[in-house]
Length: 210
Image (cartoon, rainbow, N blue to C red; front, side, top):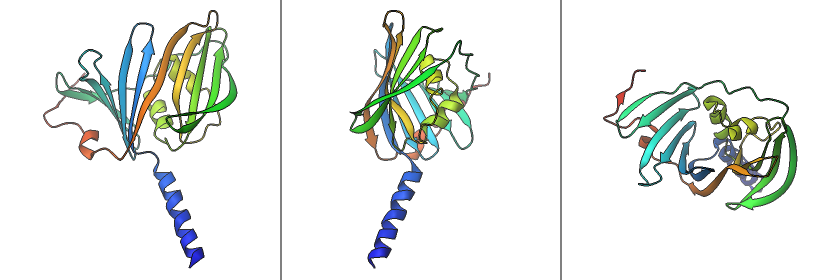
């Protein structure tokens, strides 16, 4: 009976881990000119990203990622339209990115490991504090999206990360003077799967044909 209980507990634990993260992740993105607030809503292979207006706090735009179908759709709440977002190839990185692994610290109650990616030719160093938890949506989403900012590009230069790895904080600096160019920081992680309706195109939205 005891062995059966242990086997059941192990099976449940592995099943929960395989399911990955479900919930919400609020984060801020700072640049020299602006600060943006954003939220991921995650359930299974579906991810919604809401981007908020700094002045009003209203949703300025959203993206719906279907990681199983490899599609990205955008939502424009002001015009009430939606369309398919084409992922683009990222620019070629000049020079060589050197990756070093550092120490550990806790962010949002989660153990994170420091990774620094440096590129002298691009005068850039980005420090990532990466959680190797169950954020299995993050890497597939970033590969599908192919963002052109250096924080996204340099993250993909880190090899050997666990399947559920995601940075909870990252900071881009110039090597020449140590000036901060951009910073991303997770400010809140909420548990509990979002409603299915949040991960679908809202009623009343029309398809935008480009």
